[in-house]
Image (cartoon, rainbow, N blue to C red; front, side, top):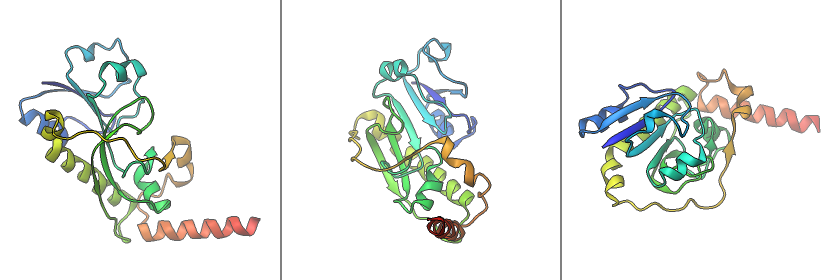
Length: 198
């Protein structure tokens, strides 16, 4: 099987790529913006998106319907979009990881598998991201063959949840070494300041 691995963050030595190659798959790593005319699409059976900084064109989504999989470090439908680990802490929403099909919207595709995770209050935001990424990688490795064999049936996401965008991140760009406990304290301080202003 020929698999296109889309990631602007991870390299070829990622555990996902290593696992796929260990099963005899040919894996093509691509980090640029994918368009319908991209030669890299030739002969591709599946597309896997993991920390890929671009939204896929609707034509590509249609061409590979049911064969484009996204690894997302949140418990969808909570924290769709950018920086899901940060928002799961800040908004105090359920925490976890999800593998889902890609559709034409942002992180709204049918869910294949999910797993809840927990962050300790003394873990930094960076620690939490590492934990979530490791969890989603391990979930993928355990479930990949069940997914492609059809033993796992996609289920629609429940209504509701949250979504965040790149523009929402300006105020917390430098908080990677802040602990979960201190992030929640900062949130409380900001909320109190906002209440005083009104």
